[in-house]
Image 1 (tube, rainbow, N blue to C red):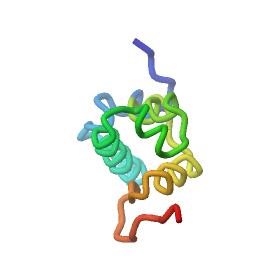
Image 2: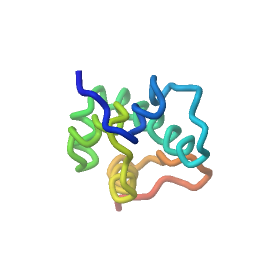
Image 3: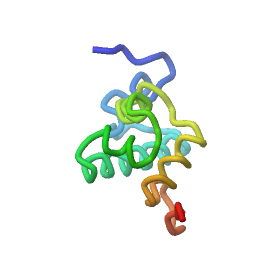
Image 4: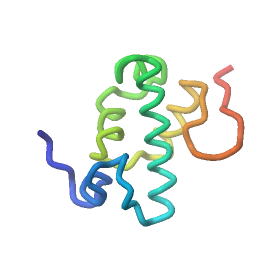
Length: 98
């Protein structure tokens, strides 16, 4: 098993992203995004499926889902555009790839 890096979501919040102890509001928003990404992984049946659709490396997606790293803004944008779905919590429509 890979040990989470200090300061990573999994090291700060055991059980990430399902932890109920996420205290920082900005971390709560990222937590919601990761939960939405997990939903998309289930929809595409695998991390590989999400990677193929979004163009984001499967290892990066896996690290985000497992809480080994915080997602970058560019990665979040690439995921949303590639999957054509809103992952970031909010009321805006999903971006279009067309």
